[in-house]
Image (cartoon, rainbow, N blue to C red; front, side):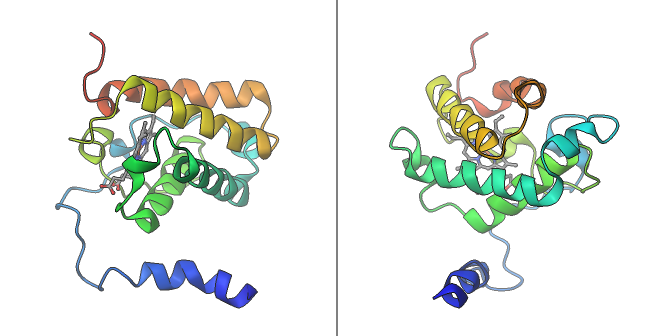
Length: 160
Ligand code: HEM
């Protein structure tokens, strides 16, 4: 049973045939991550480094999928890719030394119709995931402050 659970993500990863990336071509760059990294290693350590970030991303994604407010938005999306790029993005911003290979926030969320309430729900789920990892409250808020300016690229009709 445990072996099945461990293999599930690998099998899911193979669902996309090799060499067929359904995402439109784009130039990979850390600049796509939407924020500059923190300096020093205090934030990276506050998030328990790579394993902690992996648990936080998983906690957030799992909560999003179970959240009736926003679960529909994640249906039929490439969640293997989403988990990977979120890990890269968080690690890059927390100065964990990762490269971000995903799209810009504007391109990734284009035409999804994401509204302010959806953003609120996602942030609440991220906060719950950070709390579960015992990330200090001040560090949580410093991280959220890095993400906050991205709302104008994520929201379909941002307030002007
Ligand atoms: C500051 C807030 C947010 C951040 C930092 C963020 C981050 C990301 C990242 C890194 C990706 C992957 C990019 C790629 O595939 O190249 C992504 C994709 C996605 N995001 Fe967000 N996101 C945010 C807000 C939201 C909100 C509010 C929703 C909906 C409630 C959402 C739903 C999605 C979905 C469904 C995808 C998959 C898109 C696809 O595969 O085509 N995101 N996001």
